[in-house]
Length: 85
Image (cartoon, rainbow, N blue to C red):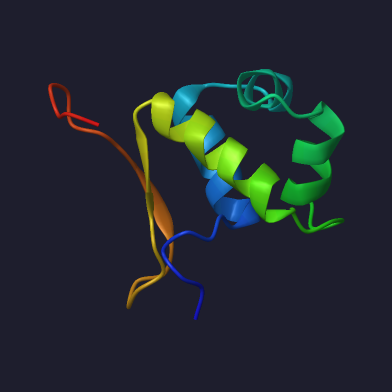
């Protein structure tokens, strides 16, 4: 089972959807190339741990919570407004 710090391709796509960010926008915010995001989301390449952390941090600054895999599986959720990071 993936741990709480694992980003799945579907989570990345879903988070971008909630934020209305393109792959290029996520890449810019995370400081990685657009092809890195594209290749990860399509399952072409796995991420290095440092790159995964950059993407997760960028997503979380956009007020999206990355939910770990549990009974219902991994997911994403918008942070409630007014909630501290």
